[in-house]
Amino acid sequence: MLSEFVKSADWKNEKHMPVIECEDQVKAGECLPIKISVGKEIQHPNTTGHHIAWIALHYVPEGSKSSIEIARCEFSSHAASAEGPDTGPAKTCSTVSICASLAKSGTLYATSYCNIHGLWASEKVVTVA
Image 1 (cartoon, rainbow, N blue to C red):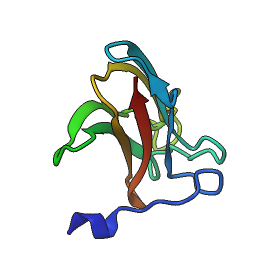
Image 2: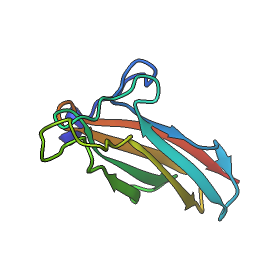
Image 3: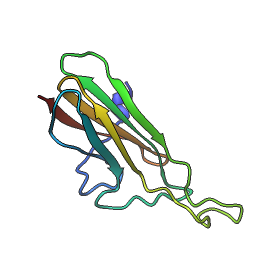
C-alpha cells in the first residue's frame, strides 16, 4: 500500500510537513480561505537538487468513502538556469492559498512531495455549521 510510504511529523520540527491553516468552523456554502505551506517553521531549501515538487489538497466529507481533490499546485522554479543548478534568479516558496466552499463537515488532507524525501501528509478537521 502507498500509505506505508506517506510520512508525517510535527511541522514545528520537520521541514517537509504540509501545514494546513484555516478556520476550524465555517458556515455551509461560505468560502473558506485555506493556506497550505511546507517549511513553515524550518524552511525547506527548494534548490535544483532538493525541492518540493507539488502540494495537493483533498477533502473527505463526513461519512464518505472517497476523497475530493480540491487543489493541486506544481512548483517549477528551483533556481535552475543555463549557467547551472542553483544559479537561477527564481526559487519557489512552497505555499498555496485557495478558497473552498464546503457543504458539510469533513477532513482536509494536504500532501506534499519532496523529490528526495518522498510523500508527506497532514490533516485538519473542519466543521460546517
